[in-house]
Image 1: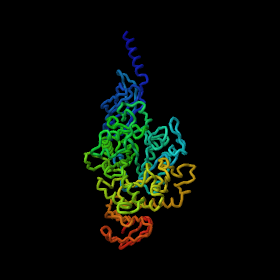
Image 2: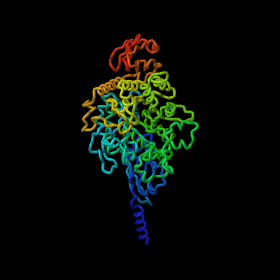
Image 3: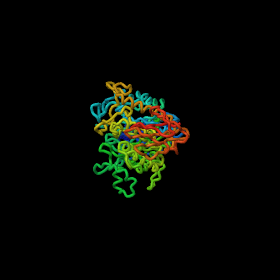
Image 4: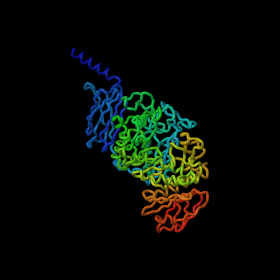
Length: 613
């Protein structure tokens, strides 16, 4: 009878554990000697919640187990001590003292240089790339079995086939232009039905989309870039995921995402978070409302979700050796979580730079999010850098509008004068355009002289300059603001392209001149210390002419923008507080020498970047 009971008990155990398997474990590994050594492991599998995890691996301790409403999830908190060695940590999941399933977690030796990797800074110039639209280096991954969307270059919003191998092949081109950093739009898996190429609807936070390549290929490309002196910036999104993310079919808990009785989109009113009179419901709709129906809004107030997102970001920085992160839609997630997230990254990587996207044209709103800003409501940010949308808009208006008391160049002057609002204006990322707005050549109505003035301004004003791929060859989007056209394929990135911007084959003379113009400024900027960390002094625009200086003890640079249709004389006595003993200025662009002791003649619709000596 005793034997029969034992047999029945064993049979019950087999039946109850049937189908119990660990289908997913995230993160898939960790590293030794990290500051962040208390790790939350997410295990997913059918009815695994009541299994008891154990491990005998030296230096790894299970500190706690957290269950959620869904029995298919189990969150296990572990500590990795200094005693731990690299190897496979085996977790044994037990029930009734019987082993049910095992799962290995890899501990890797750490590259100790990771903790002190330099972030991107004012000495850098960033090249922004939408990977699907840059170079197709591996046509074999254009379509992947089981993935919802296939390649179709005839669709402006479709997948076109650019990939990691293509990016790797193009690194020499980027470096030779004079760039020192690369920001890539998201490469994580986006297994969405349509419009998946842009990357902002993540369906797996630990996996590169196989239509771009593999995790290993991303790592290899990052290593190659770093070896060439190119820093890598990863585009991240913690505000939302894609509706086809694997967990959306089986959420850990109802509060894993922000849910509403009926679909509620964000109101996009970013001033709500600073508004002293804003209603609670308006604020809630801003932060908890969804971007679009296919982008579920993640709930960072859920502590398990918060830890998941922080760990994921650290994982990618460590895995790739990143120099920086560009955080998408920075104000939309829970604001206190964003401070926690940023601080966690900076504790692990003190020199890392993180730039947040706050798309607003009011500098008072943008400045709110920068580290060191004292806000009236007491909010404290840890974010080093922000995208300078206010200055970008003012630059376009200033170059295009007719000059008057408060229009034209005065708009640029007035916006820059508001730098007192920022804790550290020199850490802003400045740019003429990006992947979400019309190309700069289109914004200035394809006026090449205005294009040059915009590029020179971004290259020489305070901040960290960023340029979108193809700006160097005057890529444009005439007559449309469709993002699929703005993010057009880079010519020469596909085998059958008849025009090849990489080699110069088939591009126009104006495109070649523009590329040479940008490259000359970029290469000069690399050693221009006054531009990297010098002071700024500008003078009120007069008669369609704007003058500003960047200077330090080693260098003095005078930038002159002349919007006039005719040659103009510029008297220099007005600038005597900056021009002291200098007698000549060499134009970085043309190489022409100007005497700067009395006056200079400005070519019509020109920009001069004078290295004063």
